[in-house]
Image: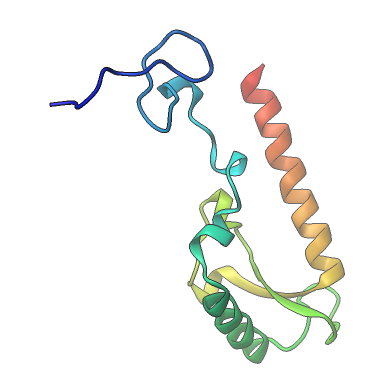
Amino acid sequence: MPLSAPSRCSQRCGKLATSKGRCDDHQRAAWENPSANSRALTSTERARIHKQQIKREPHCRVCNSTEHLRADHITEIADGGSLFDASNLQTLCDDCHGIKTNAARALRAAQRRLTRG
């Protein structure tokens, strides 16, 4: 039995809120929330994954650089990629990582525009 009366959607559509103050039609997509990666991994876990990945693959997968490396999720967490699966990780330098991340963000933005009309 609910403890209080149901609330209305915070987006003022008049429907009842079902989760996090929003109706089903106005629930936020994964990319609209804080980074799924930053919510899911502690700094200790992120450092451990980074260290293991750089040890497995000590050069950028794209340009073969060995400087300014970082572990990157091939399929981003916001897109449903696995956090800890080594097959979803690759080593990228900062420049290549920036290019990949910007392209993924642009794609998600384009998808949002298409779904919103």
